[in-house]
Amino acid sequence: MKNTTKRRPVRRWYISPADFLELRHSCALSRKACAAYLGVSLHTVRHWETGRHRVPWSTVRLLRLLRCGDL
Image 1 (cartoon, rainbow, N blue to C red):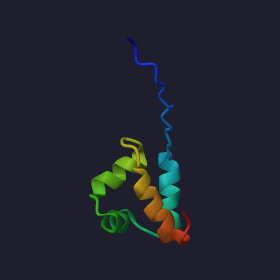
Image 2: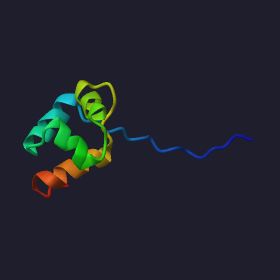
Image 3: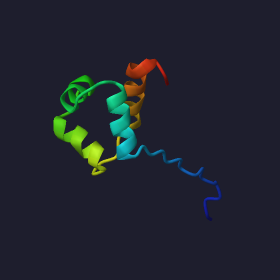
Image 4: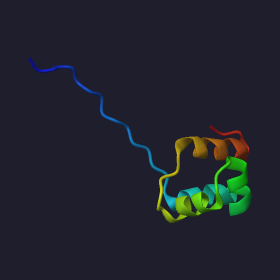
């Protein structure tokens, strides 16, 4: 007997590397300051900016909150 339950489609969000860079600049953070604020390494921030890794949504939310309290 087959399982007939339907699965919901997974919603995928995505912030481009250029959008992340713009967000970081709008917060007036250098790469080093951004890494320290988020508790990640400098290499991680570089990888996000080059598109090597996807930016976690929690990171985007923290930076938007820092920028102007916008969620």
